[in-house]
Amino acid sequence: MDTEEIKKYINKELKQFKIKQYSKGYKYLAEAIYICIFNEDAIENMSQNVYPRVAQKFKVKNTKRVKWTLENAINTIYRDTEINKICKYFDIDIEQKLTVKFFIYTIISKYFNSKQ
Image (cartoon, rainbow, N blue to C red; front, side):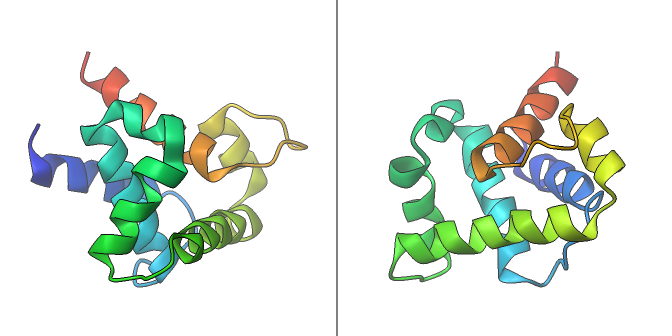
């Protein structure tokens, strides 16, 4: 897997949503997606496999802070992006709420489907 190609893919996907690229939430989301692309099993236990690695990269002492920041990033996306765009991208109904895990899972699934 080409690191630069993966990073370009992640940025292209995240640009579809309204979230500032310089925000912690954006950076943490991009890194979490990157981790899950390289290790598909990581998404099964985010608390053990993803949050600690994101915390380590960004020098955050508490993994709960990483989780909180990711959840807030998803809430920002949900609040600021057109709901129809979100529903179409994630194939969900308007009443459904996005979780961090589902958000990341959808993006990595689209990545692997594009490689087939």
